View 1 (cartoon, rainbow, N blue to C red):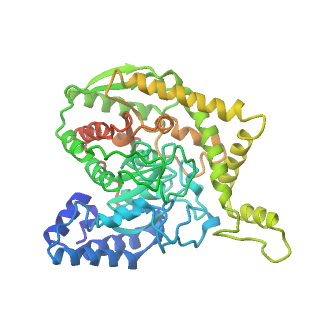
View 2: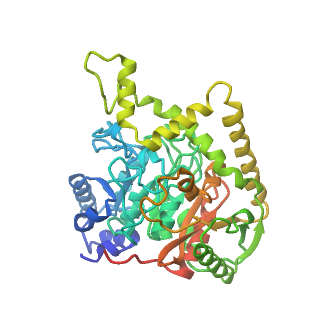
View 3: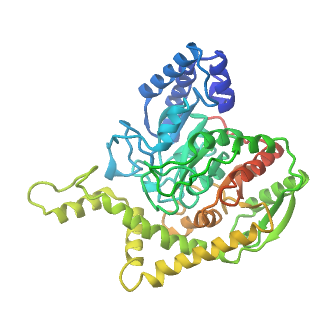
Length: 491
């Protein structure tokens, strides 16, 4: 069983279904792997060993009873600590929720349990998903298994690092401005952001409600598609959930794996032509584009003129929404409470709690958002940013009249060393330069490894129209078939 941690989710599910290995054995192998390497990686904030083994025993009991198991039954999964898990700590990477154990499961967690997956625990993240490197976690940073001195991306660096370190074959992330795709790119894994509303936000601790999108993370495209299928679909408890079935992403991934993209039109975004990106990243990207063309795809250049304004628009919209969402963390209802000694007033308790509980990046964004929403500035800042969002949506609509999908590098640079960008927030924000437009539009996007630059992974991003998630999986799987799956160095 020592090699089971290197297997794909599809292979593990087949082993369990055929009785060649028990779900308990598979789970224990991954728990042993976490114990062996996570002191160096720090992908997990909480490992729920007892809960995982109990879930695994339930899968084995179902198989022994002759029940038909689902395509992911018995497969371990790591869950970003932004999703509520009943009785299991949910901190969102923040001291303000340290020790909080939710009384309910998020819809996605419920669906993971129903699919027979085995939840290993909760992964590290930038506090309240605000960051691009997982350096803003209140519980310390996560390391990139490719180079432990470098970041694993963010905000979902824990989920991507768990995959790259072979601590889990599947993981769940959330993507507000690139927090699934960007970590996937810099760790050499696959990260997919579904169409906004295609996966439920019920039980997802909100950062920016009009942008937040939970989604799958895996080491290959087919596994990501299977996980997407398991967690997606309409949820009546989420008012933004789309009342439509999930596109057949699994069939699309399998079709793409054949390596035939004849008749598919790929749009190269002119505005993402490489300015500000590392030469090695662009070189790997261009090689990947050539590989896609050899598979039969037609590559054309498409202009999306308003994409250049996506970054400033995002950093007005998301902080504004976060300043509203985070008002609930007041030291009264749940989580940390400071100064409740009978001497301080309610307002003083709120102030002391937030000062002690929120980290510097969260405070920065709350202040930015509160300012942008304040009287006299709302129209000048937040209102203008929403108009830019409309223009970006029109760019996408016009582009998809010409091509089937858009492609670009996922990030402008490979994983950078710890501390190299924390002193300059703008340089940190640039990590999401290529991923943010998709969030503002609401369409799906996926990052798939496309090569190396200086020995570190580079990701290619595929962006598709809303509710056309299957298109991006087909192209991503085709690229994967051409360039192969990256293998991180042995830890």
